[in-house]
Image 1 (spheres, rainbow, N blue to C red):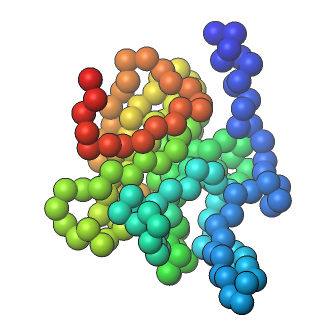
Image 2: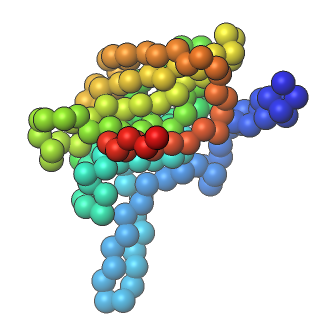
Length: 171
């Protein structure tokens, strides 16, 4: 309980533009690198950006983030999909006093493997009122549609949990 008290305000802040995570592209030409901001101007302050695992080290158009909406929210309370092609933002919100962790993409079996939205997004959502954590499953193509599954975990997991998905089973 004392540890939770120490870290309860971990994300309670408003990020200045200099502190906000940004997406950038790097172009190298004639030995010189040029940085350019990319992504929707309507994106919320975010951290922990990720992409569909099939597109690692390849050109991609979709980025999934753990975001703060509105930017005065004080905590990372939603998951966003940033479309770098259309500059659209798709958001999943979880309600008041509920805060999301990093998005983890899990490719769907079957379907178009070249579709960056052909996946599920997993995230842990901590409810500060109930002191409980849910594992939330979202459709990567329609975050605003809300959870397609919610699993209440037997014990709460507060801020700072990070993970990854693997198709392998390790016992």
